[in-house]
Amino acid sequence: MKPVKTLLSLTLATGLSAAAMGAANAEVLFWSTQANPPEEQQIMREKVLADFEGGADFAPSEGGPWLTRIQAELQAGEGKIGVLGSLHGDLIELSDGLVDLSELDTSSMNKTFLELGKLGTDEQKYIPWMQATYIMAANKKALEFLPEGADINALSYDQLIAWSKTMAEETGSPKFGFPAGPKGLKHRFFQGYMYPSYTNSMVTKFRSAEAELAWNKFKELWSYTNRSSTNFSFMQEQLLTDEVWVVFDHTARLADAFNQRPDDFIAFPAPAGPTGRGFMPVVVGMAVPNSAPDMEAAKNLISYMSQPEVQIETLRATNFFPVVDVELPDDMPASVKAAGAAVAAMSGSADANPGLLPVGLGDLGGKFNAVYVDAFERIVLAGQDVREVLDDQADSLRKIMEEAGAPCWAPDAPSEGACPVD
Image 1 (spheres, rainbow, N blue to C red):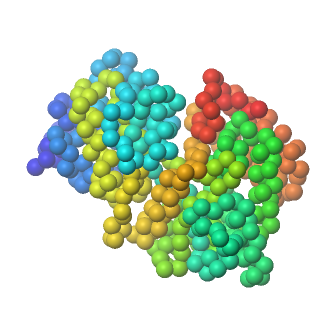
Image 2 (cartoon, helix red, strand yellow; image 1 turned 90 degrees about the vertical axis):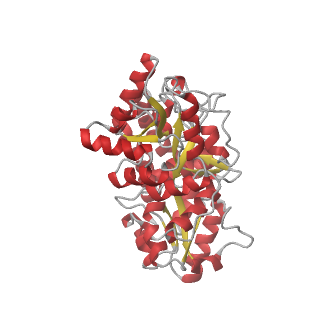
Image 3 (tube, rainbow, N blue to C red; image 1 turned 60 degrees about the horizontal axis):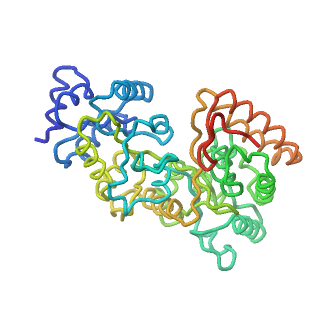
């Protein structure tokens, strides 16, 4: 029996927490905010970590307790936590307490995410662990209307507009669909896709001339978009009814289409604009705190978790995609195979320009999202002047950033204090 299984049995018998027990033996305590649901925890322990020599104690936690404990150990200068697993935004707060992992072999790892893992320093503060994101999907009937010479895996926004225009004209109705409904994730498109692709920014250049161009381009795309999009929230539904043929949405909100009719749909990367192929990855990293009791064992665990076969087992456990080059096995669901290829192509593209999830906003996150949604409704739906709307909304955005005191995050350059809105 693996040491971890012994630990779990003892934990159940005594009622002690897994974290507490991990501190009492030589296993590496893997302190994570991810894979927290019971079924995911079980797969992590019984499948993903089962073959790690020396054993690992996987101890997931909610974000608050997770941060409190590691901050206490760092302040004390010693602790039991060997490896930290959490979102990019969580690890930023701990940057000064993380060891440099540059010595680890990262040759097969996504270079864009590795750069994010430096957290603005010259050191490798964390190693990417897994990712999730938003992609494009299309009914194969739409492919015959692609612009001449267009590569579906390297589209530009101009090509997407031309494609949507041709589909609308040739079929008699708009075939591009957008999740602009009440529960749609439209704000993530504007924050993580449109703004990085046209301005290389999400906040600082919110009202720039480049942003004005981006909104005008989106207005043009909207003219060939299904008008019922303001009621669309999960684009898998409209793909399955053939109401639209080309869509943008989160991988989880497209899964049913691929799983029900795998031969009818394809997944592909989001388009690129003048400043790259903006996309919003949910990046999860692994790090080693300065207070770790056994640095070598902790680094060995990170190397183990980065192996392709372990990354695939992690995908089975969490539904988060690998960050290394892998060939997905045939027994994966159709949605995973389709989305996995698109995610890998998008995040590994030469012009990839990630726009990260907002960091440091606290309970102002809703107001932050509303700035982008309001801009969409005023510019695109109400037809108001783009320049006037951006100037108005920039004032609201500036107040939110200053109240939160949130520094800039990628693709905006790091800032001292609140991220400025130029």
